[in-house]
Amino acid sequence: MKFLTRNLKYIKYTYVKMTFLTLFVCVLFLDGYQGFAAEGENYFHIVLNGVEIGAAADEDTAERLLVEARREIAGKSEGLTFMDADLSVQGEEVLWGKLDREDVLQDRMGEVLEKSIRETMHRSYTLKVNEYIVNLGSAGEVQKLLQAAVDKYDEEQLFDVELIRDQGRELGALTARVNRREETDEDQKSDFVAAGVETVMTQIGEEFYDGGEKGFEDYDLGVKTMNFAEEVEIVEAYLPENQLSTLEQAVDEVIKEQETVGEYTIVRGDTLSEISIKVNIPMDKILELNSDKLTDENSTIREGDKLIITVPEPELSVERMEENYYEEIYDADIIYIDNDNWYTTQTVVHQQPSAGFRKIVADVHYLNDKEVSREILKEEITMEAVPKIVERGTKIPPTYIRPISGGRQTSGFGRRNAPTKGASTYHKGVDWAVPTGTSVYASCGGTVAKAGWGSGYGYVVYINHEDGRQTRYGHLSKVLVKSGQSVKQGERIALSGNTGISTGPHLHFEILINGSQVNPLKYLN
Image 1 (cartoon, rainbow, N blue to C red):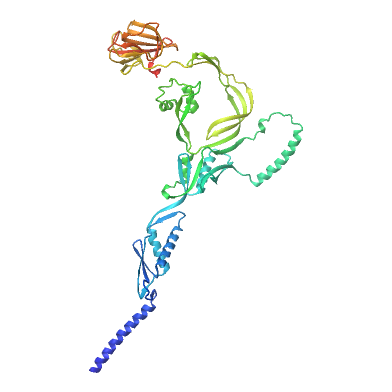
Image 2: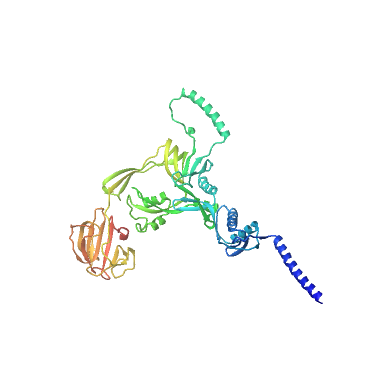
């Protein structure tokens, strides 16, 4: 019995000993586990953005693998990728530990980093023309955009757009230049042969040249030069994808004509109808844009004044010069005879015009589709044009102001129902209701033609003006001037009242041209 007990204890001891020995061997030879010398922290736990990645033998390994993982993600895009990378490495001292392979750690880091990508900034190019800015994904797209602007006016495909470094700006800034396309080798050979023949013929012909003018057939017609009218700025940048435009969108924006506000300066001889035709804008649109200056198509305009007009223009304008041949009906320039004794509103036509016919070759300068100037190189007149001869006044005509301050308009010019017995159904002036005794002023300087009682008008004042017009002020309570007296514009001439055929205290005001009443509101400044 004692023997069995002693052997049983030995067997248990041996079992426990063999178990520890087996565990030791397993730990010693198990993949990923290794023994460490006890020299301080030798086993490092890696945590990236709060996620457990694994374990490495040292802290430098973790940082190196993070750099490689970020580089691998960044290499998948040509832009700049922004991501969170909060790396935490916690070390400890161990005798045995399982280390993760470096490729596994790097793959795990990549997975965590891709989930934390905040934004990718794409390499792009910003094109600026005046106040217009568009962002495109490549320099090639910028070039195609600019080429599309040129091709709109280059039917023969003679010009190419080239992006060049802008020497006047910092490194990385570009601008654009329009170049005539280079000829092919075959074209150059043909031109060389042609030039040789032409040289020989020229030398022979010089002996017989009589100094005559070039014929129409001697001109080389077509587009000669082309360039952008505005400065083009191109800057390389990194932008998020949502700020980039597609090439199709950019082409549509740049080429499509936009309405921009412009000004037209009135020149001598202009009328509103002529201006409307000249700027190709409807009359009602001109009146709407200039409502502070113009009331209708008969409004007075003066040389040097400016009118607001809308001009359809693309964001990027192209200027070009073409040498063109024309056969056209033309008008001779108007011949003006200035008369210093007449007002500018007075004109007399002494000779009616007659159109002529001519053939010409000219250098024509365009801004987009609009002709800017023309230089005639050769002209042959088949039928001479007869000019229009106009005598015109140079004196600035007098102006007319409202003859009363305040008041409410109670009756306008034109047909109306008679407000009281004896009143006309066609009102020949304008009425403003004002209290009796309100000051009445001369609408324009002149000479008093009548001052006193007038049938129907009650007390009335007539004033003759230098431009041949007459103003009348009726239903007055008191007259302050006399016949033959000179008055200045704005001078007090009477007090308003309710005399004559009247329905209440008011001022009746008329303007007469050539003895006939006109609507005064059209002539008041």
